[in-house]
Image 1: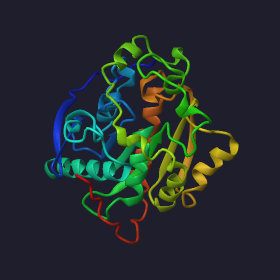
Image 2 (image 1 turned 90 degrees about the vertical axis):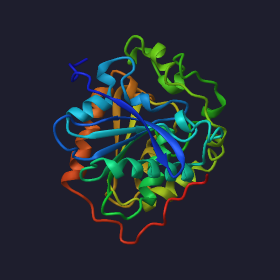
Image 3 (image 1 turned 60 degrees about the vertical axis):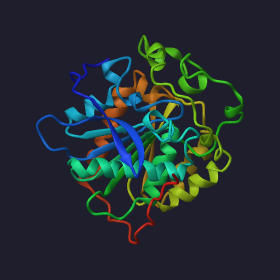
Image 4 (image 1 turned 180 degrees about the vertical axis):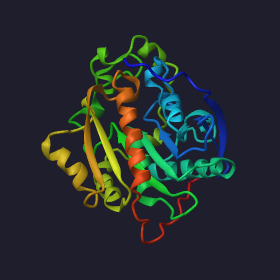
Length: 303
């Protein structure tokens, strides 16, 4: 693995999301204002520290992005971390999006957010990111630049939800071949794990149709990354074509991360993936898209 930047200060905080406490990790540039805020959204059964390089410095998105001039705000999704006692069953996708946007708004009240917000999300977190991108409020103070989503597609692989898997023990669905990850990853991953809130399974059957509906509404650039050892999703040629075709023309592109498994940001491929995701963010800053013509309805969370 290549040399990674020295670990920078990553601090924890709790944000007020319209009365719901949302815990987060944040890393900020040391000597300059941020170019933008990367809002990092973790996947199913994990926490924000997924993005903090628990097993190896090369897998640390927060440090890397801060060294390149970005603030990273990695949030614990509703039902995880500080909100677990308030939301023991979690929230549905739309409500999670509203809660995370409210947490981001609370952060923005007291912190510089640069040119706006870039979404970077993994797996189930990608569902929240896609909903956010489709319904982002028209606010010139906090514009959405784009979205980088990994480990998310439209149609589950046959039987994926029927096969047991182990997030901490190297199961095939979540990990792929074990040699794709640094030594100590599975021990370190145990510190990330949280119970999956019950509401997160309620909308599984409707996701394929929902993906298409949300994608059709997105007007910011989207980069979809899928590992070459991805086992959760149907990824034949027709399914891959449909992933980008669901978006308006020119909005989305699909890339493959090589020698990588589903938990991309924990593996040997994490650093090149993060660098490419941040390069994509630079592109979104350099070539901003026109704002959505009509204001979107407000994101309103269910309390």
